[in-house]
Image (cartoon, rainbow, N blue to C red):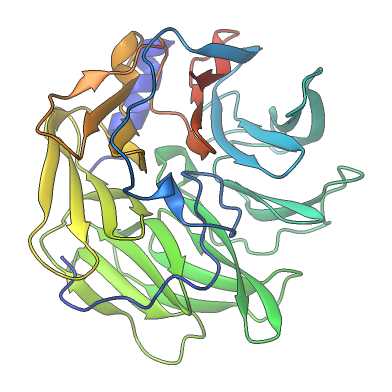
Length: 360
């Protein structure tokens, strides 16, 4: 099962000269949470890495747990059960909730085919599945009768995002589909707009909202790179950096863009100044890096792995330190989320070997 998982993930792996606006608007933030509340990775301050070690398991016995999201009281987990894009309808996937104060996990909603990116807001959880974007009531677990958007079909290869944002007097959701499109819909559905539409095998993978612009990665296709587009769709998307040809994940700190790209031994992690300038290559020779975050002067990210301590790695951004494993053992990539001064992560093992953990 581990080798099958690695094969599926590797199938999906195929410097801004303009300063972006000050981050005063919604942002997915918090690594992979998609909460729309803060700047990801806690920025570049300090130079003290987290203590390495085995980590602390929070929830075990899971079948292919993927992405994470958190609010003030709970942690939400997308448990896919399979990365096979031919899952039945309804499928075996589900959304779990784990109280942050301790206690047993509960199943919030079921019937998903292969849930990936999730985002939590005050009254709802948004789940991106093979059928599209679903809205789940936090209090009751009820799903809408129909998906808010049904243009998604590549969530099993990763790189998807669900980003709550505020546009004028409306709450909206931005979706990086991992296929050809970057889509915005109202938080309650309707008013769908394609902010970017590629052709052929174009992949839109990784996105963040900065003020009233969406920054995102385009891989494959005719014009890959780092793009930005107004959230309201008032202007076409602009190519900001064409040197990133196989981007997989995008994150933002107060001073930098963090980008993962490529795989199969050629994957890299890049750090691009938001003020403009050359990209810094901070890690190379990776199998399928994803979810870069920066915490206390250290850059952490996940990598494709069938097991071992190399699925969660780090490298100092304050010194010329070497790339090293953080310490927990697991299967990657899975999710990664900054939670205050700790990291929350999933080990994306199939069967009953998957789990959610915390570092330290």
